[in-house]
Amino acid sequence: MENHPLEYDYTVAKMFMLTTIILGIVGMLIGVILAFQLAYPGLNLMLGEGLAEYTNFSRLRPLHTDAVVFGFTLSGIFATWYYIGQRVLKVSMAESKLLMFLGKLHFWLYLVVIVAAVVSLFMGITSSKEYAEFEWPIDILVVVVWVIFGAGMFGLIGIRREKSLYISVWYYIATFLGIAMLYLFNNMAIPTMFGVSDIGESGVGVWYHSVSMYAGTNDALVQWWYGHNAVAFGFTVPIVAMIYYFLPKESGQAIYSYKLSLLSFWALMFLYLWAGGHHLLYSTVPDWLQTMGSIFSVILILPSWGSAINMLLTMKGEWQQVAASPLIKFMVLSSTFYMFSTLEGPIQAIKSVNAIAHFTDWIVGHVHDGTLGWVGFMIMAALYHMAPRLFKREIYSKSLMTAQFWIQTVGVVLYFTSMWIAGITQGMMWRAHDEFGNLAYSFIDTVTVLHPYYVIRSVGGLLYLIGFFMFAYNIYKTMSARKVEESELQNATPMGA
Amino acid sequence: MDIAQLQAYGYFTLTIGLVLILYGYIYHLYSKKKDVDGVDYESYSNMALKDDIDDTPVASMSEDKAPKSAKK
Image 1: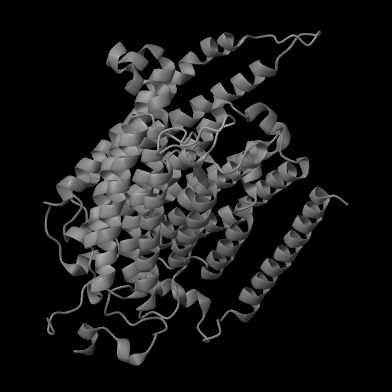
Image 2 (image 1 turned 90 degrees about the vertical axis):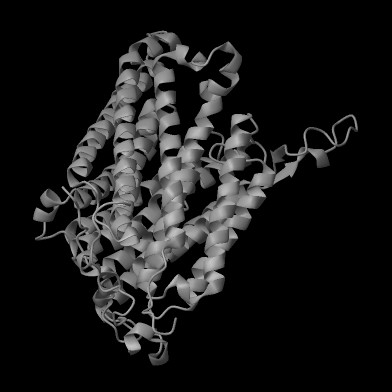
Protein backbone atom coordinates (compact mmCIF):
# COMPACT_ATOMS: atom_id res chain seq x y z
CA MET A 1 0.00 0.00 0.00
CA GLU A 2 2.84 2.38 0.87
CA ASN A 3 4.00 2.62 -2.72
CA HIS A 4 0.56 3.12 -4.22
CA PRO A 5 0.02 6.70 -5.31
CA LEU A 6 -2.91 8.19 -3.45
CA GLU A 7 -6.10 8.53 -5.50
CA TYR A 8 -9.52 10.03 -4.92
CA ASP A 9 -12.02 7.34 -3.94
CA TYR A 10 -15.33 7.70 -5.74
CA THR A 11 -17.09 4.60 -4.37
CA VAL A 12 -19.83 6.58 -2.60
CA ALA A 13 -20.15 9.07 -5.47
CA LYS A 14 -20.85 6.14 -7.81
CA MET A 15 -23.52 4.75 -5.48
CA PHE A 16 -25.38 8.06 -5.35
CA MET A 17 -24.97 8.51 -9.09
CA LEU A 18 -26.98 5.31 -9.54
CA THR A 19 -29.83 6.51 -7.31
CA THR A 20 -29.80 9.93 -9.02
CA ILE A 21 -30.54 8.26 -12.33
CA ILE A 22 -33.02 5.65 -11.09
CA LEU A 23 -35.00 8.04 -8.90
CA GLY A 24 -34.87 10.65 -11.67
CA ILE A 25 -36.58 8.18 -13.99
CA VAL A 26 -39.16 7.24 -11.33
CA GLY A 27 -39.96 10.84 -10.36
CA MET A 28 -40.13 12.19 -13.90
CA LEU A 29 -42.16 9.23 -15.17
CA ILE A 30 -44.75 9.81 -12.45
CA GLY A 31 -44.67 13.52 -13.33
CA VAL A 32 -45.50 12.78 -16.95
CA ILE A 33 -48.32 10.44 -15.90
CA LEU A 34 -49.73 13.21 -13.69
CA ALA A 35 -49.53 15.73 -16.53
CA PHE A 36 -51.48 13.41 -18.83
CA GLN A 37 -54.00 12.72 -16.06
CA LEU A 38 -54.70 16.46 -15.84
CA ALA A 39 -55.25 16.60 -19.60
CA TYR A 40 -57.16 13.29 -19.76
CA PRO A 41 -58.79 12.56 -16.36
CA GLY A 42 -59.73 9.04 -17.48
CA LEU A 43 -56.10 8.09 -16.89
CA ASN A 44 -56.75 8.25 -13.16
CA LEU A 45 -58.21 4.79 -13.71
CA MET A 46 -55.45 3.58 -16.03
CA LEU A 47 -55.07 0.28 -14.15
CA GLY A 48 -58.79 -0.20 -13.58
CA GLU A 49 -61.26 0.69 -10.83
CA GLY A 50 -59.70 -1.80 -8.42
CA LEU A 51 -56.30 -0.07 -8.41
CA ALA A 52 -57.67 3.46 -8.69
CA GLU A 53 -56.57 4.11 -5.13
CA TYR A 54 -52.94 3.80 -6.24
CA THR A 55 -53.14 5.44 -9.64
CA ASN A 56 -55.18 8.57 -8.95
CA PHE A 57 -53.64 12.03 -9.16
CA SER A 58 -53.72 12.81 -5.46
CA ARG A 59 -51.97 9.57 -4.47
CA LEU A 60 -49.26 9.99 -7.12
CA ARG A 61 -48.62 13.71 -6.75
CA PRO A 62 -46.52 13.57 -3.53
CA LEU A 63 -44.66 10.62 -5.01
CA HIS A 64 -43.66 12.78 -7.97
CA THR A 65 -42.54 15.76 -5.91
CA ASP A 66 -40.77 13.71 -3.25
CA ALA A 67 -39.07 11.45 -5.80
CA VAL A 68 -37.64 14.37 -7.76
CA VAL A 69 -36.79 16.46 -4.68
CA PHE A 70 -35.61 13.89 -2.15
CA GLY A 71 -34.68 11.23 -4.68
CA PHE A 72 -33.22 12.70 -7.86
CA THR A 73 -32.01 16.08 -6.58
CA LEU A 74 -30.73 14.96 -3.17
CA SER A 75 -28.91 11.98 -4.70
CA GLY A 76 -27.36 14.36 -7.22
CA ILE A 77 -26.29 16.65 -4.39
CA PHE A 78 -24.75 13.74 -2.48
CA ALA A 79 -23.05 12.27 -5.57
CA THR A 80 -21.47 15.63 -6.46
CA TRP A 81 -20.47 16.32 -2.85
CA TYR A 82 -18.60 13.00 -2.60
CA TYR A 83 -16.85 13.97 -5.85
CA ILE A 84 -16.22 17.72 -5.50
CA GLY A 85 -15.58 17.58 -1.74
CA GLN A 86 -12.52 15.37 -2.05
CA ARG A 87 -11.10 17.25 -5.05
CA VAL A 88 -11.28 20.82 -3.81
CA LEU A 89 -10.16 19.85 -0.30
CA LYS A 90 -7.39 17.70 -1.88
CA VAL A 91 -8.00 14.77 0.39
CA SER A 92 -9.13 11.25 -0.50
CA MET A 93 -11.86 9.32 1.26
CA ALA A 94 -9.49 6.36 1.06
CA GLU A 95 -7.37 8.11 3.69
CA SER A 96 -9.96 7.61 6.40
CA LYS A 97 -11.70 4.33 7.13
CA LEU A 98 -14.19 6.18 9.30
CA LEU A 99 -15.19 8.62 6.54
CA MET A 100 -15.54 5.77 4.09
CA PHE A 101 -17.73 3.89 6.54
CA LEU A 102 -19.87 6.99 7.14
CA GLY A 103 -20.21 7.54 3.39
CA LYS A 104 -21.43 4.00 2.77
CA LEU A 105 -23.70 4.08 5.82
CA HIS A 106 -25.08 7.37 4.50
CA PHE A 107 -25.96 5.69 1.21
CA TRP A 108 -27.55 2.53 2.59
CA LEU A 109 -29.62 4.33 5.23
CA TYR A 110 -30.70 6.83 2.58
CA LEU A 111 -31.89 3.90 0.51
CA VAL A 112 -33.91 2.60 3.48
CA VAL A 113 -35.56 6.03 3.80
CA ILE A 114 -36.38 6.08 0.09
CA VAL A 115 -37.99 2.63 0.23
CA ALA A 116 -39.95 3.56 3.37
CA ALA A 117 -41.07 6.82 1.76
CA VAL A 118 -42.17 5.22 -1.50
CA VAL A 119 -44.07 2.40 0.22
CA SER A 120 -45.78 4.67 2.76
CA LEU A 121 -46.79 7.28 0.18
CA PHE A 122 -48.19 4.60 -2.13
CA MET A 123 -50.19 3.29 0.83
CA GLY A 124 -51.54 6.78 1.36
CA ILE A 125 -49.78 7.35 4.68
CA THR A 126 -49.03 11.06 4.83
CA SER A 127 -48.81 13.94 7.27
CA SER A 128 -50.51 16.05 4.55
CA LYS A 129 -47.88 18.80 4.61
CA GLU A 130 -46.62 19.62 1.13
CA TYR A 131 -43.05 18.39 0.50
CA ALA A 132 -43.06 17.18 4.14
CA GLU A 133 -45.45 14.26 3.78
CA PHE A 134 -43.39 11.67 5.63
CA GLU A 135 -44.74 10.53 8.98
CA TRP A 136 -42.63 10.82 12.14
CA PRO A 137 -40.82 7.44 12.05
CA ILE A 138 -39.45 8.26 8.59
CA ASP A 139 -38.69 11.83 9.70
CA ILE A 140 -36.50 10.50 12.50
CA LEU A 141 -34.65 8.28 10.06
CA VAL A 142 -34.20 11.27 7.72
CA VAL A 143 -32.57 13.18 10.57
CA VAL A 144 -30.18 10.27 11.22
CA VAL A 145 -29.21 10.15 7.53
CA TRP A 146 -28.69 13.89 7.49
CA VAL A 147 -26.50 13.86 10.59
CA ILE A 148 -24.33 11.12 9.02
CA PHE A 149 -24.05 13.21 5.84
CA GLY A 150 -22.95 16.19 7.95
CA ALA A 151 -20.51 14.15 10.02
CA GLY A 152 -18.90 12.87 6.81
CA MET A 153 -18.80 16.37 5.34
CA PHE A 154 -17.19 18.02 8.35
CA GLY A 155 -14.91 15.01 8.80
CA LEU A 156 -13.57 15.45 5.28
CA ILE A 157 -13.18 19.19 5.83
CA GLY A 158 -11.34 18.37 9.08
CA ILE A 159 -8.60 16.37 7.35
CA ARG A 160 -8.22 18.66 4.31
CA ARG A 161 -4.91 19.78 2.81
CA GLU A 162 -6.29 22.94 1.23
CA LYS A 163 -6.54 25.58 3.93
CA SER A 164 -9.33 27.64 2.44
CA LEU A 165 -12.72 26.21 1.55
CA TYR A 166 -13.63 26.54 -2.13
CA ILE A 167 -16.86 28.45 -2.75
CA SER A 168 -18.72 25.22 -3.62
CA VAL A 169 -17.89 23.82 -0.19
CA TRP A 170 -19.49 26.88 1.42
CA TYR A 171 -22.62 26.17 -0.57
CA TYR A 172 -22.64 22.49 0.46
CA ILE A 173 -22.24 23.47 4.11
CA ALA A 174 -25.15 25.90 3.73
CA THR A 175 -27.21 23.09 2.18
CA PHE A 176 -26.49 20.88 5.16
CA LEU A 177 -27.23 23.51 7.81
CA GLY A 178 -30.21 25.04 5.99
CA ILE A 179 -32.07 21.81 5.39
CA ALA A 180 -31.26 20.53 8.89
CA MET A 181 -32.91 23.59 10.43
CA LEU A 182 -35.88 23.68 8.05
CA TYR A 183 -36.66 19.99 8.23
CA LEU A 184 -36.51 19.82 12.02
CA PHE A 185 -38.77 22.78 12.65
CA ASN A 186 -41.37 22.08 9.98
CA ASN A 187 -41.74 18.41 10.90
CA MET A 188 -42.28 18.99 14.62
CA ALA A 189 -45.29 16.76 15.26
CA ILE A 190 -47.06 14.89 18.01
CA PRO A 191 -47.96 11.23 17.40
CA THR A 192 -51.72 10.89 17.79
CA MET A 193 -51.29 7.94 20.16
CA PHE A 194 -50.03 10.37 22.82
CA GLY A 195 -53.12 12.53 22.46
CA VAL A 196 -56.29 12.47 24.53
CA SER A 197 -59.60 13.29 22.85
CA ASP A 198 -62.34 15.55 24.21
CA ILE A 199 -64.16 12.60 25.71
CA GLY A 200 -61.05 11.23 27.38
CA GLU A 201 -60.01 8.55 24.87
CA SER A 202 -56.27 7.98 24.68
CA GLY A 203 -54.11 6.08 22.18
CA VAL A 204 -56.05 7.61 19.29
CA GLY A 205 -55.18 6.58 15.73
CA VAL A 206 -52.53 4.37 14.22
CA TRP A 207 -49.08 4.47 15.86
CA TYR A 208 -47.34 6.12 12.90
CA HIS A 209 -49.86 8.97 12.52
CA SER A 210 -49.14 12.40 13.90
CA VAL A 211 -50.43 15.96 13.90
CA SER A 212 -48.35 19.09 13.37
CA MET A 213 -47.20 20.88 16.48
CA TYR A 214 -48.40 24.16 14.97
CA ALA A 215 -51.95 25.12 14.15
CA GLY A 216 -53.74 27.38 11.66
CA THR A 217 -51.86 30.44 10.45
CA ASN A 218 -48.73 29.48 12.39
CA ASP A 219 -48.67 26.11 10.67
CA ALA A 220 -49.01 27.81 7.30
CA LEU A 221 -46.19 30.21 8.13
CA VAL A 222 -43.80 27.48 9.24
CA GLN A 223 -44.84 25.31 6.30
CA TRP A 224 -44.02 28.01 3.71
CA TRP A 225 -40.92 29.16 5.50
CA TYR A 226 -39.93 25.50 5.01
CA GLY A 227 -41.45 25.08 1.56
CA HIS A 228 -39.80 28.10 0.02
CA ASN A 229 -36.47 27.49 1.69
CA ALA A 230 -36.51 23.86 0.60
CA VAL A 231 -36.32 25.45 -2.85
CA ALA A 232 -33.50 27.64 -1.55
CA PHE A 233 -31.39 24.97 0.09
CA GLY A 234 -32.35 22.03 -2.12
CA PHE A 235 -32.82 23.57 -5.57
CA THR A 236 -30.59 26.64 -5.47
CA VAL A 237 -27.72 26.53 -3.00
CA PRO A 238 -26.35 23.02 -3.82
CA ILE A 239 -26.90 23.53 -7.55
CA VAL A 240 -24.90 26.76 -7.38
CA ALA A 241 -22.24 24.69 -5.58
CA MET A 242 -22.17 22.36 -8.59
CA ILE A 243 -21.96 25.01 -11.29
CA TYR A 244 -19.19 26.88 -9.43
CA TYR A 245 -17.09 23.75 -9.70
CA PHE A 246 -18.14 22.02 -12.91
CA LEU A 247 -18.33 24.99 -15.31
CA PRO A 248 -14.84 26.38 -14.52
CA LYS A 249 -13.40 22.86 -14.48
CA GLU A 250 -14.99 21.69 -17.73
CA SER A 251 -14.16 24.92 -19.58
CA GLY A 252 -10.71 25.37 -18.01
CA GLN A 253 -11.62 28.98 -17.15
CA ALA A 254 -11.13 30.56 -13.73
CA ILE A 255 -14.32 31.92 -12.14
CA TYR A 256 -14.88 35.42 -13.58
CA SER A 257 -14.86 36.98 -10.11
CA TYR A 258 -14.23 34.88 -7.02
CA LYS A 259 -15.04 37.90 -4.85
CA LEU A 260 -18.45 38.18 -6.48
CA SER A 261 -19.06 34.51 -5.68
CA LEU A 262 -18.35 35.16 -1.97
CA LEU A 263 -20.52 38.23 -1.95
CA SER A 264 -23.40 36.46 -3.71
CA PHE A 265 -23.13 33.63 -1.23
CA TRP A 266 -23.64 35.80 1.85
CA ALA A 267 -26.29 37.91 0.15
CA LEU A 268 -28.21 34.76 -0.79
CA MET A 269 -27.97 33.43 2.76
CA PHE A 270 -29.14 36.74 4.15
CA LEU A 271 -32.09 37.20 1.82
CA TYR A 272 -33.55 33.81 1.04
CA LEU A 273 -34.78 32.89 4.52
CA TRP A 274 -37.15 35.84 4.63
CA ALA A 275 -38.84 35.39 1.27
CA GLY A 276 -41.17 32.47 2.12
CA GLY A 277 -43.97 34.85 3.12
CA HIS A 278 -44.75 35.42 -0.57
CA HIS A 279 -46.52 32.02 -0.58
CA LEU A 280 -49.08 33.47 1.83
CA LEU A 281 -49.98 36.76 0.15
CA TYR A 282 -53.63 37.69 0.75
CA SER A 283 -53.87 35.11 3.54
CA THR A 284 -54.33 35.47 7.30
CA VAL A 285 -50.65 36.14 8.11
CA PRO A 286 -49.87 39.73 9.22
CA ASP A 287 -49.81 42.20 6.34
CA TRP A 288 -46.34 43.57 7.18
CA LEU A 289 -44.98 40.03 6.94
CA GLN A 290 -46.54 39.55 3.51
CA THR A 291 -45.01 42.84 2.36
CA MET A 292 -41.60 41.87 3.69
CA GLY A 293 -41.89 38.52 1.90
CA SER A 294 -42.52 40.39 -1.34
CA ILE A 295 -39.69 42.86 -0.80
CA PHE A 296 -37.12 40.19 0.05
CA SER A 297 -38.22 38.15 -2.96
CA VAL A 298 -37.59 41.09 -5.26
CA ILE A 299 -34.17 41.88 -3.74
CA LEU A 300 -33.33 38.19 -4.12
CA ILE A 301 -32.75 38.90 -7.82
CA LEU A 302 -29.39 40.46 -6.90
CA PRO A 303 -27.51 37.48 -5.39
CA SER A 304 -29.16 35.06 -7.81
CA TRP A 305 -28.07 37.07 -10.81
CA GLY A 306 -24.72 37.67 -9.12
CA SER A 307 -23.99 33.93 -9.31
CA ALA A 308 -25.59 33.39 -12.71
CA ILE A 309 -23.83 36.32 -14.39
CA ASN A 310 -20.58 35.27 -12.73
CA MET A 311 -20.95 31.90 -14.44
CA LEU A 312 -21.83 33.36 -17.85
CA LEU A 313 -18.90 35.79 -17.62
CA THR A 314 -16.62 32.87 -16.75
CA MET A 315 -17.20 31.86 -20.39
CA LYS A 316 -16.02 35.30 -21.59
CA GLY A 317 -13.88 34.90 -24.71
CA GLU A 318 -14.59 31.16 -24.71
CA TRP A 319 -18.05 31.08 -26.25
CA GLN A 320 -16.87 28.74 -28.99
CA GLN A 321 -16.89 26.08 -26.28
CA VAL A 322 -20.66 26.44 -25.99
CA ALA A 323 -21.01 25.57 -29.65
CA ALA A 324 -18.45 22.78 -29.48
CA SER A 325 -19.41 20.97 -26.28
CA PRO A 326 -22.91 19.73 -25.39
CA LEU A 327 -21.75 19.53 -21.77
CA ILE A 328 -20.98 23.26 -21.70
CA LYS A 329 -24.31 23.85 -23.48
CA PHE A 330 -26.13 22.15 -20.62
CA MET A 331 -24.39 24.28 -18.02
CA VAL A 332 -24.72 27.60 -19.83
CA LEU A 333 -28.42 27.00 -20.50
CA SER A 334 -28.81 25.88 -16.90
CA SER A 335 -27.32 29.16 -15.69
CA THR A 336 -29.56 31.05 -18.11
CA PHE A 337 -32.66 29.26 -16.81
CA TYR A 338 -31.51 30.13 -13.30
CA MET A 339 -31.51 33.81 -14.27
CA PHE A 340 -34.86 33.47 -15.94
CA SER A 341 -36.44 31.62 -13.06
CA THR A 342 -35.05 33.99 -10.43
CA LEU A 343 -36.48 36.93 -12.35
CA GLU A 344 -39.87 35.26 -12.80
CA GLY A 345 -40.15 34.33 -9.11
CA PRO A 346 -39.76 37.88 -7.79
CA ILE A 347 -42.23 39.15 -10.39
CA GLN A 348 -44.79 36.62 -9.16
CA ALA A 349 -44.11 37.69 -5.57
CA ILE A 350 -45.20 41.28 -6.24
CA LYS A 351 -48.61 41.59 -4.59
CA SER A 352 -50.54 42.88 -7.61
CA VAL A 353 -49.04 40.23 -9.91
CA ASN A 354 -49.65 37.57 -7.30
CA ALA A 355 -53.33 38.49 -7.28
CA ILE A 356 -53.46 36.98 -10.77
CA ALA A 357 -50.77 34.32 -10.43
CA HIS A 358 -51.67 32.76 -7.08
CA PHE A 359 -53.06 29.20 -7.29
CA THR A 360 -52.76 29.17 -11.09
CA ASP A 361 -50.67 27.05 -13.46
CA TRP A 362 -48.22 29.92 -13.90
CA ILE A 363 -46.74 28.90 -10.53
CA VAL A 364 -46.39 25.32 -11.76
CA GLY A 365 -44.67 26.66 -14.88
CA HIS A 366 -42.30 28.74 -12.75
CA VAL A 367 -41.34 25.76 -10.62
CA HIS A 368 -40.64 23.66 -13.68
CA ASP A 369 -38.52 26.14 -15.63
CA GLY A 370 -36.39 26.25 -12.49
CA THR A 371 -36.30 22.53 -11.80
CA LEU A 372 -36.15 21.17 -15.36
CA GLY A 373 -34.03 23.95 -16.85
CA TRP A 374 -31.75 24.76 -13.94
CA VAL A 375 -31.67 21.87 -11.46
CA GLY A 376 -32.14 18.98 -13.91
CA PHE A 377 -29.75 20.32 -16.55
CA MET A 378 -27.05 21.07 -13.97
CA ILE A 379 -27.27 17.68 -12.24
CA MET A 380 -27.13 15.85 -15.58
CA ALA A 381 -24.18 18.00 -16.67
CA ALA A 382 -22.44 17.22 -13.37
CA LEU A 383 -22.93 13.49 -13.87
CA TYR A 384 -21.74 13.74 -17.47
CA HIS A 385 -18.56 15.44 -16.23
CA MET A 386 -18.09 12.94 -13.41
CA ALA A 387 -18.80 9.69 -15.27
CA PRO A 388 -15.55 9.62 -17.31
CA ARG A 389 -13.56 10.43 -14.17
CA LEU A 390 -15.36 7.74 -12.17
CA PHE A 391 -15.04 5.02 -14.79
CA LYS A 392 -11.85 6.23 -16.54
CA ARG A 393 -13.72 6.04 -19.83
CA GLU A 394 -14.94 8.58 -22.37
CA ILE A 395 -18.61 9.57 -22.65
CA TYR A 396 -20.21 6.99 -24.92
CA SER A 397 -21.80 9.39 -27.41
CA LYS A 398 -21.48 13.13 -27.95
CA SER A 399 -24.15 13.19 -30.65
CA LEU A 400 -26.62 11.45 -28.35
CA MET A 401 -25.88 14.07 -25.72
CA THR A 402 -26.44 16.89 -28.20
CA ALA A 403 -29.74 15.35 -29.35
CA GLN A 404 -30.78 14.98 -25.73
CA PHE A 405 -29.95 18.63 -25.07
CA TRP A 406 -32.21 19.89 -27.86
CA ILE A 407 -35.07 17.49 -27.12
CA GLN A 408 -35.09 18.48 -23.46
CA THR A 409 -34.73 22.19 -24.21
CA VAL A 410 -37.78 22.04 -26.47
CA GLY A 411 -39.55 20.08 -23.70
CA VAL A 412 -38.82 22.76 -21.08
CA VAL A 413 -39.90 25.57 -23.41
CA LEU A 414 -43.19 23.81 -24.22
CA TYR A 415 -43.73 23.25 -20.51
CA PHE A 416 -43.31 26.79 -19.28
CA THR A 417 -44.88 28.61 -22.24
CA SER A 418 -48.05 26.49 -22.02
CA MET A 419 -48.22 27.08 -18.29
CA TRP A 420 -47.76 30.83 -18.71
CA ILE A 421 -50.73 31.01 -21.03
CA ALA A 422 -52.77 28.59 -18.95
CA GLY A 423 -51.94 30.36 -15.69
CA ILE A 424 -52.67 33.89 -16.82
CA THR A 425 -55.84 32.76 -18.60
CA GLN A 426 -56.94 31.03 -15.41
CA GLY A 427 -56.11 34.04 -13.23
CA MET A 428 -57.99 36.44 -15.49
CA MET A 429 -61.05 34.18 -15.81
CA TRP A 430 -61.31 33.67 -12.06
CA ARG A 431 -61.33 37.42 -11.51
CA ALA A 432 -63.64 38.40 -14.35
CA HIS A 433 -67.05 39.72 -13.26
CA ASP A 434 -69.94 41.70 -14.64
CA GLU A 435 -71.05 45.19 -13.60
CA PHE A 436 -72.94 43.77 -10.59
CA GLY A 437 -69.97 41.79 -9.31
CA ASN A 438 -71.22 38.39 -10.46
CA LEU A 439 -68.42 36.08 -11.55
CA ALA A 440 -68.30 35.82 -15.33
CA TYR A 441 -67.11 32.22 -15.46
CA SER A 442 -67.66 29.03 -13.52
CA PHE A 443 -64.70 26.78 -12.68
CA ILE A 444 -65.51 24.27 -15.43
CA ASP A 445 -65.28 27.08 -18.04
CA THR A 446 -61.60 27.51 -17.15
CA VAL A 447 -60.99 23.76 -17.30
CA THR A 448 -62.39 23.59 -20.83
CA VAL A 449 -60.28 26.51 -22.02
CA LEU A 450 -57.09 25.15 -20.44
CA HIS A 451 -57.28 21.67 -21.95
CA PRO A 452 -55.02 22.33 -24.99
CA TYR A 453 -52.32 23.83 -22.77
CA TYR A 454 -52.44 20.82 -20.47
CA VAL A 455 -51.84 18.62 -23.50
CA ILE A 456 -48.89 20.77 -24.61
CA ARG A 457 -47.46 20.62 -21.08
CA SER A 458 -47.74 16.83 -21.08
CA VAL A 459 -45.88 16.63 -24.39
CA GLY A 460 -43.18 18.96 -23.01
CA GLY A 461 -42.78 16.76 -19.95
CA LEU A 462 -42.69 13.64 -22.10
CA LEU A 463 -39.89 15.12 -24.25
CA TYR A 464 -37.90 15.86 -21.09
CA LEU A 465 -38.44 12.29 -19.87
CA ILE A 466 -37.33 10.88 -23.24
CA GLY A 467 -34.19 13.01 -22.93
CA PHE A 468 -33.62 11.66 -19.45
CA PHE A 469 -33.77 8.10 -20.76
CA MET A 470 -31.17 9.10 -23.39
CA PHE A 471 -29.03 10.47 -20.56
CA ALA A 472 -29.37 7.26 -18.53
CA TYR A 473 -28.49 5.16 -21.58
CA ASN A 474 -25.46 7.34 -22.38
CA ILE A 475 -24.14 7.03 -18.84
CA TYR A 476 -24.80 3.28 -18.83
CA LYS A 477 -22.88 2.83 -22.09
CA THR A 478 -20.07 5.06 -20.79
CA MET A 479 -19.26 2.33 -18.26
CA SER A 480 -18.03 0.16 -21.15
CA ALA A 481 -16.81 2.88 -23.56
CA ARG A 482 -13.22 3.51 -24.71
CA LYS A 483 -10.73 3.71 -21.84
CA VAL A 484 -8.97 7.06 -21.43
CA GLU A 485 -5.73 8.21 -19.84
CA GLU A 486 -5.66 10.48 -16.79
CA SER A 487 -4.19 13.25 -18.97
CA GLU A 488 -7.38 13.37 -21.08
CA LEU A 489 -9.46 14.16 -18.02
CA GLN A 490 -7.93 17.50 -17.05
CA ASN A 491 -10.63 19.84 -18.33
CA ALA A 492 -12.90 19.16 -21.30
CA THR A 493 -14.57 15.78 -20.89
CA PRO A 494 -13.56 13.21 -23.54
CA MET A 495 -16.52 12.09 -25.66
CA GLY A 496 -17.02 9.44 -28.32
CA ALA A 497 -18.79 10.32 -31.57
CA MET B 1 -47.20 48.91 21.60
CA ASP B 2 -48.44 45.38 21.02
CA ILE B 3 -46.30 42.34 20.26
CA ALA B 4 -46.93 42.46 16.49
CA GLN B 5 -45.64 46.03 16.29
CA LEU B 6 -42.60 45.15 18.36
CA GLN B 7 -41.91 42.23 16.04
CA ALA B 8 -42.18 44.48 13.01
CA TYR B 9 -39.79 47.09 14.45
CA GLY B 10 -37.38 44.34 15.52
CA TYR B 11 -37.52 42.83 12.05
CA PHE B 12 -36.86 46.21 10.44
CA THR B 13 -33.88 46.92 12.72
CA LEU B 14 -32.41 43.50 12.06
CA THR B 15 -32.80 44.04 8.32
CA ILE B 16 -30.98 47.38 8.41
CA GLY B 17 -28.23 45.82 10.57
CA LEU B 18 -27.73 42.95 8.16
CA VAL B 19 -27.69 45.32 5.17
CA LEU B 20 -24.91 47.33 6.83
CA ILE B 21 -22.92 44.16 7.52
CA LEU B 22 -23.35 42.97 3.94
CA TYR B 23 -22.26 46.31 2.44
CA GLY B 24 -19.34 46.36 4.91
CA TYR B 25 -18.35 42.95 3.58
CA ILE B 26 -18.49 44.17 -0.04
CA TYR B 27 -16.29 47.13 0.89
CA HIS B 28 -13.85 44.82 2.67
CA LEU B 29 -13.63 42.39 -0.28
CA TYR B 30 -13.01 45.01 -2.93
CA SER B 31 -10.72 47.30 -0.94
CA LYS B 32 -8.47 44.64 0.64
CA LYS B 33 -8.52 42.18 -2.31
CA LYS B 34 -6.66 39.67 -0.12
CA ASP B 35 -7.73 37.56 2.84
CA VAL B 36 -6.08 37.42 6.27
CA ASP B 37 -3.46 34.96 4.96
CA GLY B 38 -2.47 37.42 2.24
CA VAL B 39 -3.91 35.24 -0.52
CA ASP B 40 -5.59 37.08 -3.40
CA TYR B 41 -9.23 35.98 -3.41
CA GLU B 42 -9.16 35.47 -7.17
CA SER B 43 -6.43 32.83 -6.91
CA TYR B 44 -8.87 30.58 -5.07
CA SER B 45 -10.40 29.65 -8.44
CA ASN B 46 -7.36 27.40 -8.77
CA MET B 47 -8.78 25.15 -6.08
CA ALA B 48 -11.13 23.83 -8.77
CA LEU B 49 -8.82 24.13 -11.78
CA LYS B 50 -5.83 22.42 -10.15
CA ASP B 51 -7.57 19.81 -8.07
CA ASP B 52 -5.58 16.63 -8.65
CA ILE B 53 -4.57 15.07 -5.39
CA ASP B 54 -0.89 15.85 -5.92
CA ASP B 55 -1.43 19.41 -7.19
CA THR B 56 -0.03 22.06 -4.88
CA PRO B 57 -2.75 23.60 -2.68
CA VAL B 58 -3.43 27.32 -3.11
CA ALA B 59 -2.76 27.67 0.63
CA SER B 60 -1.60 24.52 2.36
CA MET B 61 -2.84 23.42 5.78
CA SER B 62 0.70 22.39 6.75
CA GLU B 63 3.86 21.09 5.09
CA ASP B 64 3.77 17.60 6.60
CA LYS B 65 0.32 16.84 5.26
CA ALA B 66 1.33 16.75 1.59
CA PRO B 67 -0.03 13.65 -0.16
CA LYS B 68 2.11 10.53 -0.14
CA SER B 69 2.40 10.44 -3.91
CA ALA B 70 3.66 14.02 -3.98
CA LYS B 71 6.45 13.16 -1.55
CA LYS B 72 8.06 10.61 -3.85
